[in-house]
Amino acid sequence: MADWRLRLAAACLMLWLAHTGSTLAQDAETAAVPQSPPPLEIPQPAYEVLRVEDGGVPFSYRVWEEWVPQVVTTPDGGAWTFFTAQARTPDGYGSRRLFAARFDPAKMVWLPATAMPGDDTQFGASAVVDSKGVVHLVYSDRVNDNANAWSQLVYTRFVDGAWSAPAQVAPDPNAGHQMLASLAIDKKDGLHVVWRDQRFVSPEARLALPTNADILGSDYVNGAWTTPVQINTREAPDVNPAWPHLAVDNDRLVLVWSIYKGTTADEMRSAARVEWSTRALDASAKWTTPQVLFERQSGDAGGRLIDLAADPRGGAVVVYGLYNHSNNELFMQRLAEGSDAWSKPTLIASGDYGYLPRLTIAADGTVYVVFNNGRNRDVDIGGLMTDPSGHSAGPVTLTPADGGVTARASIALDSHGSPWVVYLHQLAGTSNVTEIRSLRAATFVPPSSP
Image (cartoon, rainbow, N blue to C red; front, side):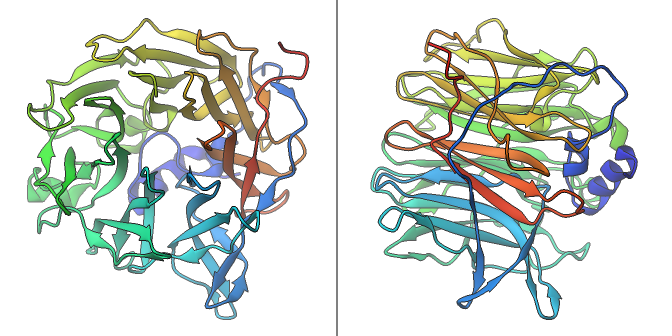
């Protein structure tokens, strides 16, 4: 296996990411360290493999593994999954397109995934569903992979059986690469989005590195996106934000993001700290001055090691890992509704698991977390559930029988509170991810647990 530092450097320069792990090989990084016992394996419902079609013709596909697939559920019992992949045609693999697959609640099957409208390269999907069941989606769209082609943030929605024409969210000749979008929806179906953008940095910095950027935000009002505003505070040319996560806490927005210092791949593989800010939902006040959620003391932090979700009862929950080579500590903190201070960190898991967490929260406050479990090409999907009081029976393995490598999962709950999990699957002995799998009604509690 190639040295992960070289792989990370390549990802930084060629795939514009550079932050905290970017390939499945890194998820399965070999490390000569003692490993903790894996989470308990428990039986799960049968998984389903998502198919890809183009013009009614089925194709095999290769997933662009840098981007975690997204899943959202709809009020009618259906769901959508979004992932970037290359369809394999008789002429070879096609371009990297964003594919959308719908779970049909009447037929009880995943319909074949089809490519979203747009240009040659699409990635970084973020989706929400409103009270009427309309799916709203933002993603980065790029004409091609050429160095002079900027990625533009676009918005579309699925209504009356079709996707609307993608429209640019915040076009600007100096925007550079627009990416890492996070879309949120409030109780009145208002849409809010944040993303990384380069319009406020110098032309020299914009051309030097796509990571020289700021976090911008916009709201969808009266059928149009508002003029974007900068949320982070710029300190120096080599101090940059990335990986924003947006959530709605009743009448305000809550945002967390990672701060990176430096310009080399080694410097940017871990965040220096994680910051947060809030803003009134109606934009009657500006975003608050960024505050520090935590600072990295050692190892790796931030980036893909953190996720944020709104608590339906009010407030928000953040889950993050602190990785110190031989062990990953997974912490949880709560922000009470309207509060300006987070709770003290609670350690919810510790061991050779908890990497790349994603979380969602049920109506009663139950928290579900999915993550990568294990390394050394023996990676699978782990899961952990805490009840509303914060008690947990401990982590479990959600993909004990899949074989190969399963990694980079997303999770959503349906109207009955049942977890839907989607993830990448790489067959044993192969070098590419060739499947997106879905696990409906996943079990997060060992049978012997109360």
